[in-house]
Image (cartoon, rainbow, N blue to C red; front, side, top):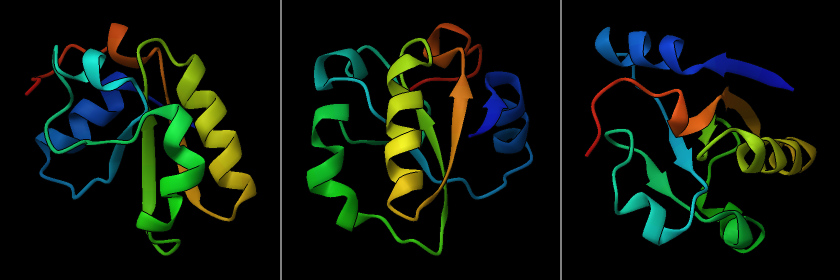
Length: 98
């Protein structure tokens, strides 16, 4: 499984790199704040909404601590998607939120 740290994601965003971030937390968790531009697809809906994702794109998967995003990363990788897990999740995030 590919992994990236929250600090690395923050640096890529600061460099204005185009990122596809999927936040797999529940809607109520995301309402408290998410990484700017992240798309919310709760973990329980990944299987049903994965067709919204393009297999030609790279995705960074985020959750609260890194556990659910790890599950989503493994599942999507098995389905043929290019995904990277953000270790530490939003607990490790020190950047801006929206």
